[in-house]
Length: 117
View (spheres, rainbow, N blue to C red):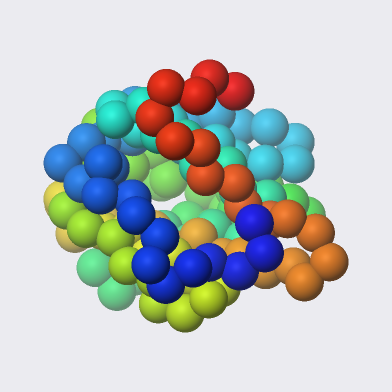
């Protein structure tokens, strides 16, 4: 993905939860109950309230195992904060920031429901 469109429609994830977090050497894949999958090769940040509890990058992997709090937490909303930052808000005061951090390479792919990767 080269930048995040401000009118991206991810409404199917609202009310669903992350059922699986797949960890790879070069990416993290989030599979939602709505069957949508988001694959990220850029920076990921997970907040509890205003406190950063975990982050991921290709170079450093996860900073802590606290990212697991996202599992089974229902999605409350999402928003495109700018063309490089997608925010997903969850119950339990959890927030995930997905960064599209490369001008040269794709750093995020968003697959619609029913596409198995």
